[in-house]
Length: 172
Image (cartoon, rainbow, N blue to C red):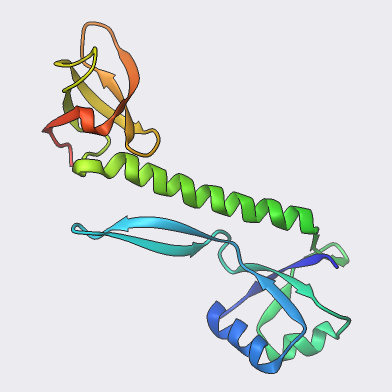
């Protein structure tokens, strides 16, 4: 069976609890991503929907869609005269995209937040062939690394380990 794209109103958790309570023959999937947030003293990981107020619904057996819509606040997305359908393969691609985005957010946060360093901070490189040179953080790279732009007579951008940088001045 294929998935159908639907919109919903109200709280997603309450809706899925109602589906379980009524034992409706539905499989619901709402793609979510995990984003790190800092409250100043600690890192919090927050789950957010990838597509707000949209979810994918698969009917587990033949049932009357109108009856389901009377019980739970679902509206199936219609394209022309047909309900929008999504294949299992496409739903798996969306699941993969959500996992990848969550990992990218985590890596960006880890790469930009080590030692409370942020994009725009001025640093001095403390190890390696570039030790003693001044640079500016221009963005996260991967876990524990950032991209910096050297402050010299010519512009040079490179990727360095965060532990090899010493903060001179914060832009935040």
